[in-house]
Image 1 (cartoon, rainbow, N blue to C red):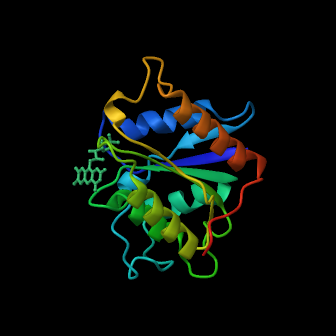
Image 2 (spheres, rainbow, N blue to C red):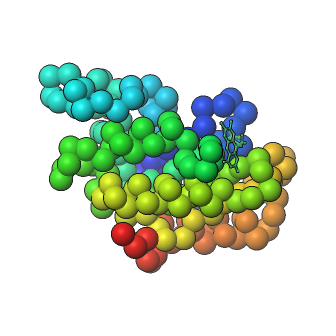
Image 3 (cartoon, helix red, strand yellow):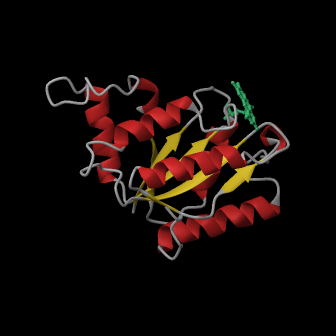
Length: 184
Ligand SMILES: Cc1cc2nc3c(=O)[nH]c(=O)nc-3n(C[C@H](O)[C@H](O)[C@H](O)COP(=O)(O)O)c2cc1C
C-alpha cells in the first residue's frame, strides 16, 4: 500500500510533522509512506496555469504522486479557524481537472495538531469538507491533537495513550478500508 502524506505546516520544528511521523509509524508492515515535498513548491492555484501548455512541472509531479497513492493522510495546523493555505492550495490543484481529478475517490485520513488547548476541530472540519467537495473520500472520523508542543514523547509517539489509541484506530480504518466515508 502506497500512502501519500500531505503536511500543511512548513515550519522546521512543526508539531504536525511530528504527528505525521507518528501516523507513519502506526502504518502496518508493507505500507510505504511518503511525505510529499511538493505542496511547498506549488504556485497558487490559477486556472490560467491549469492547461496542458502552461501546467507547472511541480503540479504535474504532484498530481502524479496523488495518482500513485492508494490512500492519503493529510496533517494540518489550524490557522484562523481553517486548514493551512499550503494544504488548501494543494487540495485545489489535486481537485482538477474537473471530472478527472487524481484525488477523486481517494481515501484520506485527516489529522491536525495545534499548540492551543483546543483540538483544531475547525481545521479538520474544513479539510474534510474541501476533500469531499473535491471528490475524495475522507474518513468521517478525524483526530485533533491539542497542546501539541507537549503532546509527543521523546521517541516521537503520542504521549497521551488515548490519542495513540485513536490514531491506531484511524490508521486501521484507512488501511483496512472499513470506515464510513464522511457525508457530502
Ligand atoms: C497565523 C496563525 C493562525 C493561527 N490560528 C489558530 C487557530 O485558529 N486555532 C488554533 O488552534 N491555533 C491557531 N494557531 C496556532 C497553531 O495551531 C500553532 O502555531 C501550531 O503549532 C502550528 O502547527 P505546527 O507546529 O505544525 O507548525 C495559529 C497560528 C498562526 C501562525
